[in-house]
Amino acid sequence: VTSGNLGQPRAGDLLLMDAGGSFGGYSADITRTWPLSGTFTPEQRDVYSAVLSVNEACIAAAKGDGGTSIASLHHLSLRLTHEALVQLGVLGPGEAHRVSRYYPHNIGHYLGLDVHDTPLASQSQPLLPGMALTVEPGLYFPPDDPQLPAWCRGIGVRIEDDIVIGSDGAARVLTTRAPKAVAEVEEAVRRGL
Image 1 (cartoon, one colour):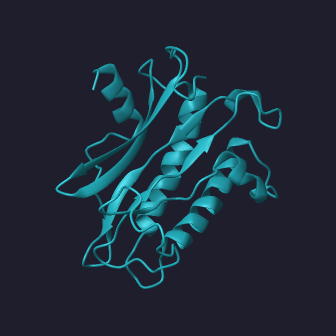
Image 2 (cartoon, rainbow, N blue to C red):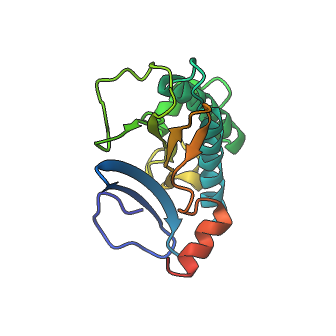
């Protein structure tokens, strides 16, 4: 496991890249995690698939319906992440309080003229048509955490998409051209994209 931009990545490592950009005065933010070898190990695939499932469920739940907010999406992501960690055998059913140890950030943030736009805006503000935000669940398992099963130590995954709430209240994903399904990611790495 290489972190902090130090050391030489190895073929079996994952590369987590969080990138921001701007176009026409507006900012974007995206994160993808890639297996440097071109293929996820079974353990990496399990963690990646768990994060992807939370990402997709939170995007599906993001609606301009007057009741959904970044805060409510975060609570959903915590519940879903706990369920995934129980299914993976990493946490027990009564250990929801430990999720934040391995998922230490919020589900997302607003986007706009800055990558972290309107930092003073309440995350409890209901989502409205025209709002742009990120959806970015993740799991980060320290390599030296004795409370973790050995199989997952050192694996870190985040999948971040940008969405905008449409005039119909539905979320539209703006980052669809960046592969995120397991087979698409592996193919992109093998092709050198």
